[in-house]
Amino acid sequence: MILHQIQTSTHCDNALNTCLRYIHPNDSILLSGDAVNCLLQTQWQQRLAAVNLLVLQDDIQARGLQKRIDDIAAKMQPQLFHIIDYSNFVEQSLKHNKVITW
Figure 1 (cartoon, helix red, strand yellow):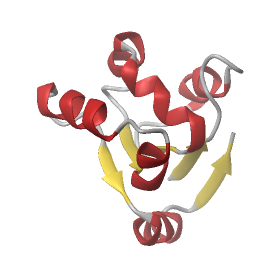
Figure 2 (cartoon, helix red, strand yellow):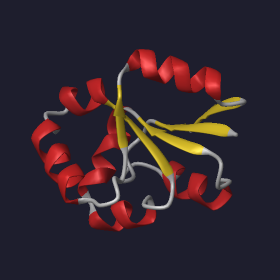
Figure 3 (cartoon, one colour):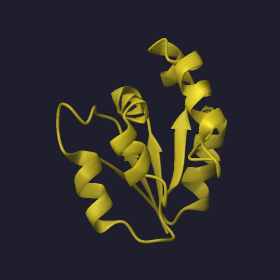
């Protein structure tokens, strides 16, 4: 079970796209940094729907996206992602066998 941490925007590189090619059903993806912006795009919401998806709260707030992300989360049934803080990130790092940063 791997925690894949994606930090870069989907506009800058293909880290998220590459990750999705290799991900195992038991793995999780953590969006941090500029990667949280992908949640604003319907195509990425659809591609990530089948993944255990975590998103760092501080990075949402730092980019001024809280209201938009809350609106997206409210529309998604079942829930598309889980917003976590840094202590939850540490817990997830320990829960998974390995962490890969893309």
